[in-house]
Length: 554
Image (cartoon, rainbow, N blue to C red; front, top):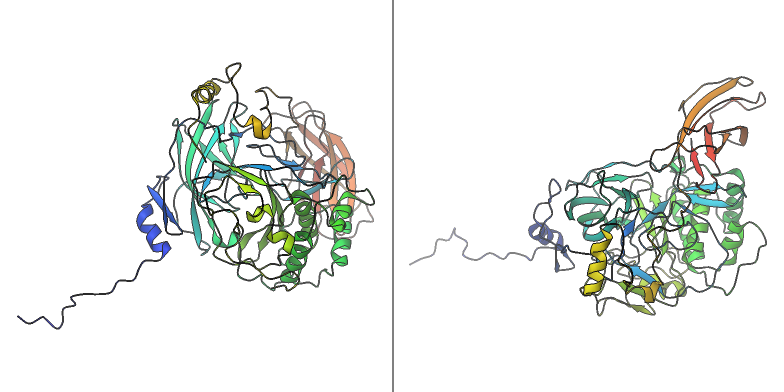
């Protein structure tokens, strides 16, 4: 019997690449429905299981952090205030919630604005904390950027409020599916600094486990090459700096050889090389100038000091930059024209990193080499999972967390188990709003005793508004405006000082008023007759008070 010459009996089929394999295994997640598994680095990662909170988990809480130093586990700090304690950190505790884990880069807080407090200290905050509805569901990426997928599994604690921070793997991360245990109709919001929030329905005041699928652009974790664009190509997207802060930052930038004539690549290479070379120093940084200049020039400090000074300098040069943080680490984010946000880790100094709930997870590593300088001290940093790093799956620590391959040399430019019965009972009790007297938390030995359920109130964020949004007024005439100062519960904040300024080539204070009992304010101010003709930004700000944080509207 003769074979048909037109018939192919055997045909070679090449092995599918990881993206193709992932599309086969993960199934559809359209409309928020979770797939059964995803694939990372050839490993099939099943959808996480639900259940009560385990001893190695920390819940995300509505109670904000202090805004000083590192964040408390599970809390979002609406501000960051710099400090002068540049000593070596103790062993840092980190709670993993993503698979593959992005440790130590779980994104809890993003801060994108620099404002001066009443004492003139530059404080980082959120320019527009108002949240917009965030869709849940699988959908094609409209920007053409390749994206990687991650499982998320986290406890949300609504006992202190119905708006809880929701963790992310990156800026511009998307939630493709979301389910809860017990079932709760959560909705998500996102603010302008890419902070995500979970909003509980009225009456929900317990702990809820959220199991979700998230994706993020691959080039957030590293890009192959920094574009040679003008350094200030996206300057219009930077929140306006106070004149004194901008002056100090540009002075420091010039000391590094940077200015308006620099390219974005030159600026990021120079800044990264400088701040990644920082070392810790015993004691307190001496007070010689402003805290920004002292930190930036000293080359001393841990992660938060490096990122604070980096972000202010970058913004002064016209680069959109953010301060990102969790309970263990802080890093910078910068926006690249046409590419979106990219993470820039500046390293840190600590005795070690102890990861909780990470022993059964692979570590995510970028497929793209880090294109920025890596001084020796940075290469051995805990943020690169080197040194005294514990809690990871065997073989995962000791590598490079930020990038799969080493970047250029400096100056070149180019074990989780189920909780005990007592812990389970305590977890159930929290749904009713209290923990049984005498119960203990196994994490106390690492992080110290947990705080009571009714802690001393922290200052609350304020949301400012101003109207009209646009106005035309002649020099020597008056301008009337009004607005509201609201707390997170949309209640009016009474008795707040409200300062009115015009920002342009120079900054002018036009007047001061105070909010009424319902949080409203209204004022009429004069426009100086000697003011140069041009376009100005009307800025309304409050320095806050003992119970409220600073806020700005423009």
